Amino acid sequence: MSESLEFTGERFVPGVAGEIELEHVHRYAFASRFIAGRRVLDAACGEGYGSVLLARTAAQVAGVDIDAATLAHAGERYRGVANLAFHRASVTALPFADASFGAIVSFETIEHLEAADQPAMLAEFARVLAPDGLLILSAPNRVEYSDKRGYANPFHRHEHDRAELDALIARHFAARRFHGQRIWLGSTLWREAGGSDAFVTEAGGADGVVVAAPPPPMYYLVLAARSAADLPPDPIGLSLFSDRDLHTLERLNALLDERMRALDAGTAHVKHLESLVAYRDGIVAERDAELAAQAARLAQFERQDASYQARIAELDRAGAGMRDEMAESRAALGEAQAALAAQERIIDYRQSLRWWAQLPWLWLRSGWRRLRSGA
Image (cartoon, rainbow, N blue to C red; front, side):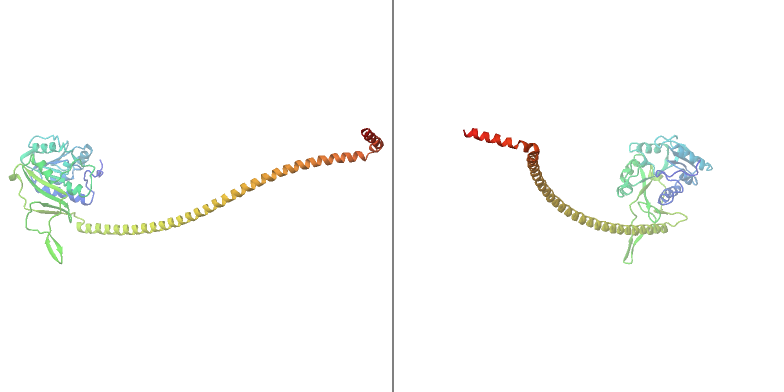
């Protein structure tokens, strides 16, 4: 079995440092003062670290969870705790007899159930809790946890504001005492009705100091019982919890420094991006000017091309006329050459002995024709 479970965001496991550790461990530390000597049910115990914290003061602790792998891990890791046992079950169907527990602890459980299943969980708590028993339950304040932060926890099925949570618990527990909790110079937990005057909370500066009211709670912790007499006396109005090895204020200062460095880096990055945008805009303007010049040149080329095309058409027409003239000239030349060839044949014939021998007879015949025509 692994020494630690993977942190999924749904259950806190030891070793995950930060605000989540302060919040979860503080709740069990707060609850421990009210369960001394009692048999305690740790509903939705998860990894089991909280059950171990409760077992240090409780008579017995029963850790209940629905996840078998988580319970197997808890059983092996904490098997040396004699007054602790783990059980697999749903919080809406607990495998225990009526009135079998003096206290029930249920931290960050109810919001993981659908709204329709939440009354069943509280009904089971009322069934297995002794008549004078105490329920210590925590739940996120939807107004601060989700609404104001615009945050949606994927593991939460139904969250409550204070009035809704109070009305839901009141169905089975007539007496209720609310406490608020959030990270405030460490995990801070205070009673709504106030408490001892042994501490004061103030704020201000050199110009004046005023009483500082606690901030709106991120979570509610409710001590509930069937009657006010069964609620334990609690003069403590405010509880602060911090880790042993790292002072929370120093951690918050370190976180603030880290945020400031991140902000400075972000500002520098924004300026760098702005310079890149300006450079890009300059390049775009330059390219636009080049495109406009190229478009002008292209238009000029197109006009020149149209002129060239018109000149070519004119030359084509002139060439066609010249071709016609050349054809006529060739035809006339052919006729002239034919006539010349005929004359050359006549000349050649007349220069021959045969022609000269026939010439006297040709004259006599010609004269005879003229005489006959004259008669």
